[in-house]
Image (cartoon, rainbow, N blue to C red; front, side, top):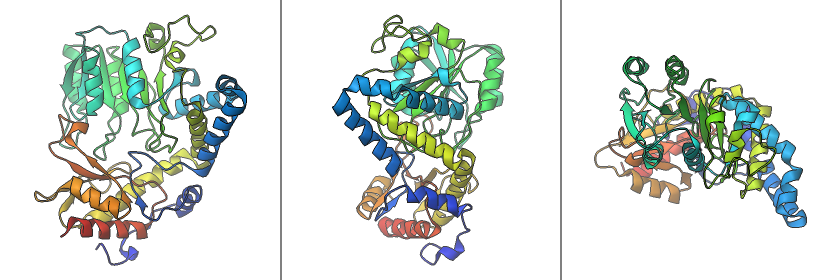
Length: 391
């Protein structure tokens, strides 16, 4: 039960990895369980950002950027490997939303074209598709928001969309969509799949085969804020038509890959250097190890919060990843509880209906610890949640 002792919680495997992750970050007096919003950067990441900003001041921003071209190439290669793309398929942006806007502006679609997306997809992405003039039609999902691949395959036999957009890992639930199965079903009919990888990257392995993917580096990779990415595979790169604010195709001689013409040039380059370090640290500690421990952390958190009065854990204990969503009782206000938690030093989020307007019917309280969380901290989290709920 919450408040008794950490002994009732199972040990989260690979404690050494958790300690290694924690040692690279400053201690916090409270509890940071909000990685799905913004992860905590390491000391090395922050130092690299500062060094590049100092180089910009000494040598000039453009000269300093040229000097780290090799670092940025390595970062693109590491991003590509995690996304299921090649190094030459990747470009940097400022955020996931910027990446999607640039991608849609350049994608070979016209206003009025039909695109499909799961009913549980990220609300702002659905809005971006509509803003491009596309007709968004929703795909069937189950009660948790998991895409019904059989229904998708049946629909593809009857009709073809211009593309299928899928949020690979949901923001508001512990759901990893069946990306490989979706890509395979669409490939049979040459329908491109575009992945929102913002929550998935760093939490899960992503299969190859998508036409494009995009996201941000600030979440489970724990890179700096203000750095996103977009990846586009052949043959779709050759069909891109970069538009403002991206540069015209011939504006940057030597850029042989169209996706790089989507890469913003007036950018937070120091943040890109910081993300390069975050990616190197992620690789050094082992992506598979990190992802396994994140899954165990998610399971332990669901166990720790399962009996807190006034709340119901939304997903099974063994649900994938480290996002943990709680549904409030009718008389509990998640936003008010979150405000009380923040005052007590607990950093967390409220997942409002706008995150998935065709799936969520009310607000949820969301926790998303990283691999440095300990069983004792999870017990403390349960105690604080009970206290702030007032039950």
